[in-house]
Length: 159
Image 1: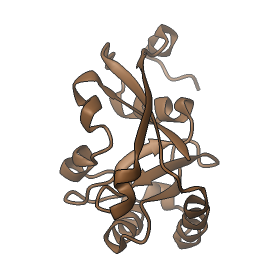
Image 2: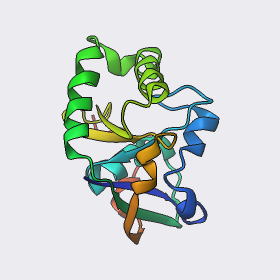
Image 3: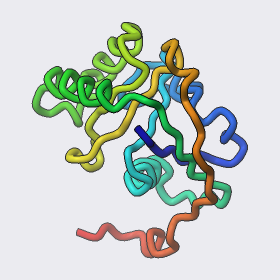
Image 4: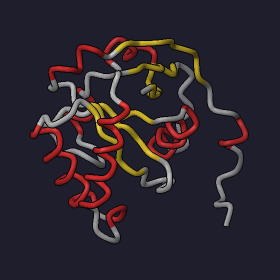
């Protein structure tokens, strides 16, 4: 399976280490648990990043495409994670962090898919750097990435 992550240029070499999430925590992990957040599509990776950076306009972004040989694992993980999520999951990081931490600590798979809280019919891929198969991760390409200037026009909400 191929997936994308967008990061700042100085962090390309460690883009999949999970260190940022380990330090700060994220939607699917508490601080202290290393998870690398990726998306199936570059467009979703961009939207996921955009909601976190707000009005900031980073000029040193790089999109990194990588792959792991694990399509069946991802599908099984998607079913397991989806079954564990109650209604309202996207409004409670306590729920998603419990699910993600449990998955990470179990080391049951090197990756799993989780629904995006931004677009909940699309999927992000969580990577577990502590899993033995993580060493099979292969970087396919890196490309400079810039958000379209139109995304920054105006300060008023669209609705």
